[in-house]
Length: 216
Image (cartoon, rainbow, N blue to C red; front, side, top):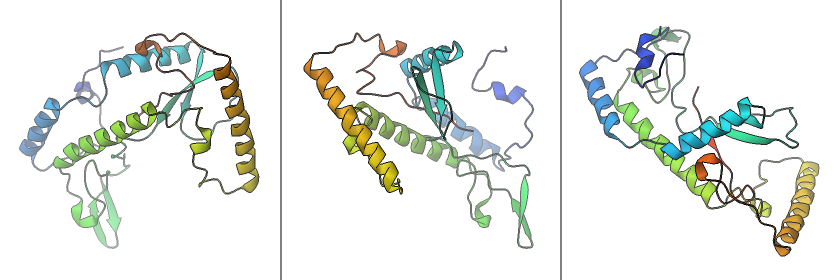
């Protein structure tokens, strides 16, 4: 496998490339982006690599959005969401027709605007995408590290999206049983060792979950 670098994609064929009218402006924005802090930390990268290796060895299950018919029984899972950077979209054609007018295709807020009068690729949108992505990632980090997904607080999870009364009752029954079991575990002093953060450690699987993001 060839070594990867931020610019290695330039050596690959690109079927639908973005053509910026002002290349000097584009280079200026790319230079600015190169000086900004990374959106993920080295430890987060190593943590994901470790967990993906577990998936490859059939020791974990990769959960990538959407519903899945696989069984999670006795199998951990790695959560990956399409969020915090999903601002560009591939198109089958460089142009599209709106009414009797042919305009550049909308390629996502990362490139141009949805309004047909705002279809010229704008390098400044790359900077805005960086800051929006960073803001979303930091918000997700804050939620996860503050115990938002903690199994100790299942009653706090919103069920506003669940329309079926029977499903709501089923979930509430499960959470009540879970809460009782966790209270019992705490009473008898159940403890577990925690490996380093990069090896999947943290405040424990009951109090914290890992959540990664991807685009495409």
